[in-house]
View 1: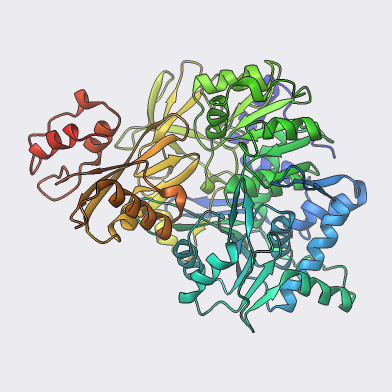
View 2: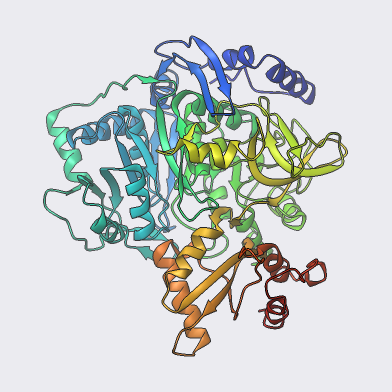
Length: 637
């Protein structure tokens, strides 16, 4: 496949960037002509950030799966679309060519239709990292159903919340999933979630672990049985349903500064163009290369850079079921050697974790196929950047340090591999179409270089979120109301003397733990559900592996008096309410929290204590009870 919009040099980047800012409609119309459309657009872009109201390629008709599958059947039917590596290194891997993937997606689209799924229905997908997960997403997109993938680490309560919010009447799951040495009972978690979700009409269950499961008559069906029915019907093709450019493609829930997760909505056309454009340019993808993104499809990274970005570009995407440290810490390097991987895209958390195991696991592994390295999910620290560069890239492979969010649909700020300069721990420059601004607390733009402020965007790019599902006002308040006529990212940022951007971390009440965003309010709500808890406050603190750890200050009036047991009980409650990813790393029992006279908890003070910055607490004399601060400092963990 040819990519006429692939940027080839620093001077080309500057020309393309200038054009994208000065003539955005013409710029994106030229990029979009490289896709398959059922009908072209009437207008490239309509937008205002007040309401907000954003429309890309208005009036166009398409189906994203025709761009990810059908158009490659003519030019490269036998090229591998997905290479799947099992959790168990001894288990045989699977390769699905574009022709085979197309066949399986059409087949499963029939299964969905036979089970009552139609255009616009919401389908919740809670599966392990197996090829059927990709097939399920693409089949939903093919028939125009809106998929909502929930990461396999979430609890039954968290799934129920998401099912209710989206009113998803259909669920696709597995009997269980493998993740390292663990077996996760997915179907049993779904059964618990559905106790309070009687509106769910059908659960399709794929066999993976052969874990015994309860199958409820009239509601639950086996994936394999449903496929057999389609085979006997003799239907092989499934024409892609025509979608409007602004029809919803998927919902992905992300944690916010309130306790309730919000469903970020992405639509068909703009998201497709953005995922493809950023994939081709940031990684400088060349036809025939093998792209290994280690993310889970339960997160936006998996949506955009395992599936929609690579497949729409006709790439070969490697999908891995397991974890980087099982059966040992050499697993990633074995996979790279086995498949001669060209591009590795992983999280700083994984890199830091593997650093801790030393270089012994890399010794003797042939990593010479690596052309590009990438990081995602959180800023990478310099030490990890240099380790990655030296040991994995052998100082020959450019590292792209990508900054973006669930809400942005794809990468916004990053160097382009080997084309624009890299700078350790900096995301560097914005992609064409991305217009960052730094503002102070009052929304006043901070001009020039060598400055820092809150990171905002002053114009939309094709992949920007359109709304939060069922609650447009929440979308407006969260992203567009903080600063007038700007999209607020929630991140602090530094711009160096050369105009390179470095993300300095969240400035709102959201933590970035191992690249996963978790709202402090959501964790506090879960902690407060535990018996004996009067009140809690959660902040982040620097963590060697995760980037940010979770520090909980808890007022506890439990009776059994065993502090260690109480901590375990609280963590179990958080796991039940949200999932193990949200468990606090440290729980400090306190008799009070620092509050203003109006009753507001001063999390800023708690954050400073957790970060060991006790000398910069500022004036605490105006607090309701200043003595509380001294007590908290004394008891710090």
